[in-house]
Structure formats: structure tokens, C-alpha cells
Length: 172
Image (tube, rainbow, N blue to C red; front, side, top):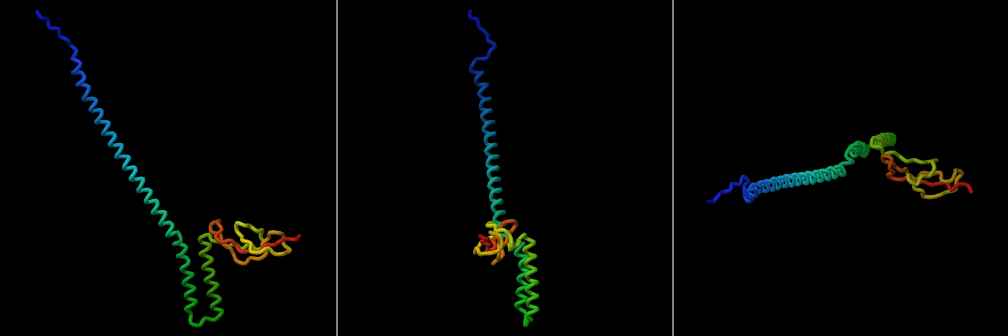
């Protein structure tokens, strides 16, 4: 007589088969997640490139058109100069008045854009704003600007062109 022994636990092979699909499912889920991350990374990279390109274009436009408002202000000055030259027979008085008005227009345009004169007569020499052309004997204290040969200009607190000056040597 043969007795059959029943075992309630499944054989080891069937247990391995049950876990295999779970590992495959986990692998597929991980691959999908990796693909999603890769896609998100590609999109972020593309967006970064687009932002970099737009920023470069904005900088280029700003560089090209930075003086647009200033140039618009100068057009009125140019128009005034052309009108003065087009006058048939201006008197010296009219010509002088026209030049003074044109200078006022130019000065107003400079003021609107913070372009100011450097006229340092009598001030202490400052190498950041003045360029000494000559040192001369003078009764004034040493390193004092005695004469201004050419005005300088400052744009928003930055020296655009230094004033050409003569400086006092001082008393020995």
C-alpha cells in the first residue's frame, strides 16, 4: 500500500514563478519612471536653452537700442542746426540766438540722461575726473586746477571724458 502524503505548501518552483512577474512588473515600472525622468530632463534642458537664447537676444537688443531715447532727443538739436543753416540771410544776432537755443536743447537732452559737465576750475585735482596737461606756477595751492582747456563729462557718476586742465605747481 502506498500512502500518499499531501503537502499543503506549494512546491518551490511555483513560488518562484509567482515572484517573477512581480520582479518584471517592478522592472517595467522602474523603466517607465526612468523614461519619465529622462523626458522631464530633456524638457528642462530645452527650456534652459530657450531661456539662454532669449536672454542673449534681449542683451543684444538692449545693446543695439540702448541709445534710442538719447538719439531721439538729439534729433531736435539736429533739426535746429539744419534750420539755422537753411536760413536765407540770417543776421548775426538771429544766428547767435539760434545757436544759444540749440545749446539749451542739447543741454536739456544731456540733463535728461544724466550727462553732466565736469568744469573743475578752482577745485582740487582729481585724476579720476581730470587729466593734467601742464603744471604751472601759480599763487593757488598745489594741485589746484588753474585753467580748464576742455570740459569733461560724466555719465551717471562715471567719467565719460576727463576734463583737460592745467594744475598749480604751488609755492616752493
